[in-house]
Every structure is written in C-alpha cells, then in structure tokens.
Length: 278
Image (cartoon, rainbow, N blue to C red):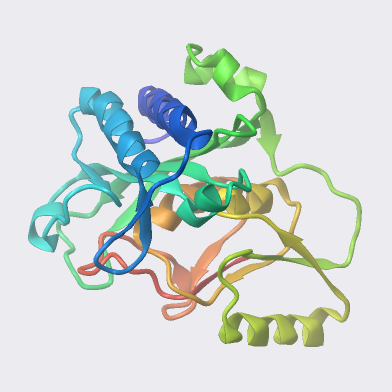
C-alpha cells in the first residue's frame, strides 16, 4: 500500500494527533505532577491522557499500536505485525515540564517485512505525523506522497488528507544561501555531538546553530531551515519514525551511524543507534 491508498490512514493519524494534542493542552495550564518511569525518565498526566486519546482514535483502524506509554510488546509478537502504529503521545516531556511550548505528538504507520525478523529490525515508516499543539503546526507525510506543513492545523481538523494537502505547504521550502546550519537539541547535547559539530566546522568552515525541542526538529529539517541534525545520544524508535518519513519525503535522509543506512525499526530492543539527518 503506497501513494493515495495510504490517505485514509494519513487521516486517522492526523485525527489521532489532534486528539492527543487536545488532551495535552487540557492539562498544560495546570500544575504539572511528574513521576519517574523505571528508566528514570519523567512522565506526566499529559503523557498518559494523550496515549489514551490517541489509542481511542487509532482503534478504528484495527491495526495494532506500540506506544511509549503502552505495554511493552515482546519482539516475537510485534515482529509478526505487517503494519502497526508507532506512537509517542508526548515527545518532549521535559519541554512540557519546563513549559517552553516545544513538545509534539508523534504518530507513524510502520510497514514490516514479516519474513525477516532480526535484532536490527524489520520495519520502516510509511506515514508520519508530527503535531505541535501549542503552535498548532502539523507536519505530515506518506510514502510517495510528499511532505507538508500546515499552520493553524486544528482549525481544519475535520478536513480529509486530500483537502489538507491543498491547504498545506509542500516541503522543503526555499531558503536563501547561508552558512551551514546545525540543528542541536536543547536538552540533549552529548560530548559525541560536540565532536561531530567540530567535524562539520572542519568541513564547512563557519557553522551556525538552530535550536528547538522534541520531534519538531524533524519539521525544521524537512523545511530546509537547517542542514544537519546529528543525534549522538539515546533515542527510542517512537521518537524518530514519524520524523524520518517526513524528512525522507522532503528529500532528506535519516542515516543510522552504525549501519550507514536509513534507520530500521521493530528491533528486538526499541532503542535507536546514533543517527544523523542531512
């Protein structure tokens, strides 16, 4: 299933993202209570409410879902799924806690090669949605269909994907010539990332920086607002899958720095290798 055949599932992903965004914003203005998960990462009521809202919408597609806030699903089960949803209900929980508005809902439709089950993964994203509820900005893409950005997206919540494309801006955008711009995380800047930036300086000379939190970074890369996004610190599969297909359809590549190939998913452990988007 590619091209226009994916549009009903693009619709489902967009509506689920809006539902997740509404759940997040319903608690964003209130006092934030923070708990710690077993891996010591933070979780809030917004993470859980967004998960429930998204699951309620995607249930209608009758496809299984793997979510950061859902149950951990054994590889033997999920690597047999032909298609499934991969969801981060609130990407950028730290940004949410710090109230800097730079968090997002991430939803990807994954396609698996069920004949190939291996530790390095058997799935790739074919639909991706990244939604920033504070700015009400939506990035979306599907395999063979291109990548798009829509402003004031929730005001057009009930339009179909076909109509939404006509209301949106095709990515990438035109940008004036500039110095090489590196997109760097606000919350995750490892020593290895700094070393990669030094290599970029050696290659390109002067280097400028852009900063934004969460998976909204993939939107900026798809727009063409930055040239390189190195991520040499831990991420999970649900952090990157939606952003990957958006960047791919905008003419970018998300490269796994271990395999030197596009990132694959549905690994035995859902932890990404270090990567670079360029």
